Image (cartoon, rainbow, N blue to C red; front, top):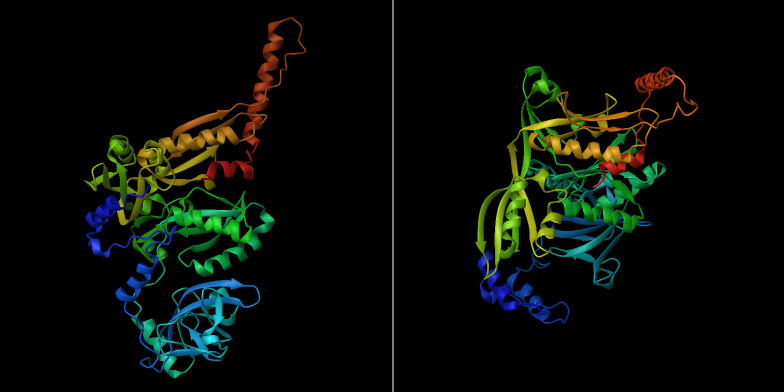
Length: 482
């Protein structure tokens, strides 16, 4: 059912490819696979031959994984020089720690010794698997430079460190907290995360503690799909099911005052959690991340999609047809408006035909507020969040309704409030259990009935003043989960 000519026209129009450059391949039938292999040979420059490689080893680590008996396995590419079993090597992460090469293999597609010889050598341009009995995750990271442990090698590491202008780590666009389903599984989850991070260094991890859910981790991801895949791998590969909170985005704030700037060592702070927010009196500006989104859709869904984009504070940049009935829409969105359910709504109103992709587009000044929650006038700091002022009331109402649905009833009334700057934006109540104190009365004076009801009312008021509303883990999960 593939419309090859139509897709070719779209590629030519969108990316200005020549028709001769487009290779038509079918993974199902195998058609075109030989042309792809020939194109790789023709279009990509070959690596230098081993005869032209330099004397000094220089290699880069671009993937890694963990094996129980061998430790951390590295996938490396030789930039210059050569490496063989027995060489003493160091990495730029920890240049003082020396490792010995135990094995060198190539993927063919399974691991086999280099050139069929356990003492084989890897040369410039080659890719291989290196085993060096490394067991500590802190010893290496993806992107590390690998050199031989001698004066020339250490000089290369020093020059690399001085010329390195910025970190190879990507900046997370989405944050989420994860907690083990059982509090006793925290150490096991920590080990699983450390192993998974070996071949996904773009994830940033820090420990955090929740008064109800216990110890967990704050993870930074490149996007929603990245988060979904990472959590799925954690479950599939390590049998570590976790509780994942709703994703949030990193905001920035500008502060003033010499003492404050000296205290925080900068005038601009990155905020990934509302609890990190300093005193609002020292904040001069708030900034929120924006993205540039691309939507490809049949034109008969244009009106509902435009309405959805405007509802999510989208700003249209461009729109154009890519064939007779499909068009491409370019919008700018605040990242917070699309990270949770935008794609689901887009698929729903387009019957699954529309696609959505996005890229980072920097930060812009925004009208942000801190949304707080109270139970019987006692603050619940764990539920506080940063939101756009226009969304504060709807978010507050949503969380209040969730709390009303999942909190257990008590002997006293529970008052649930959402506030911004002590102003109540949303409120709901959970009514108390009621005991019929007048059941034992059989007629008689109304005064007796009124007295019993007043006494019950006073007792519940005193109970509400001293009673603590405890939020159990299951309720927090239902309120915070995606």
